[in-house]
Image (cartoon, rainbow, N blue to C red; front, side, top):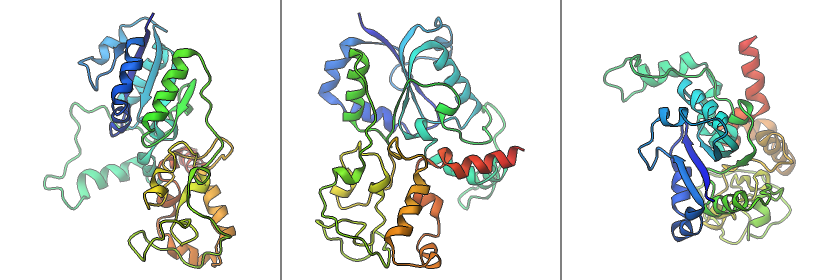
Length: 301
């Protein structure tokens, strides 16, 4: 009997859906075992169709994106109510995503900047008709409703999605590994004594040597190894988009701690190298960080 599945998209870029579609012919292996009950990205379903379904009538619900609007929060709660197994699909859903970086500012400041002050705007006004309204902060979805499984990644690779779907269909566990991107990276590593960091367009990158050893900020040492080290293998530093392994509680704090240990630089010199430390160290998971939660709690008190 096919498993009834639903795919919901909150605020996001559609990259997770694209990664699923990129399974190509392997889709033929799993599609006969799935009965799609809700997937607006590819089928003309409406929210009302999902709302009418009985509670727990969906075997597996996949939630992509984070709650930037009040409609997102409603859809997330409906998915929780209808799903027996709920999956946080992608780093936006697991950690808040890139849009979580906006938690550095109050929502009124963000709205003013976006709709009234951006240099390219020709008709500055805040839309107030037929819009659902914004949430005050981005909160990781697992902090809002319980999830049975998370699949991080920006987006998760097609292999990650295939392995998770097969595990869910067969009842096998899908545990996140404690290995890092560095464990998967083929580059040669040496003892680190970094005295300067470079932008990726500066200098000439040795294709065989560890990018961090060469002074390029590669976050593979603190990032969960699910991607197969795709970026370092292609001569591009890891940006940490998959978030930390389960054993690391705060991604950016781990990165800052490690940089303090492996660089021969003063705190002032290190600060000059990274004028946007939150954007550099918490690319997709600032909303899940200690510092974001402390700041948010302080604002609400």
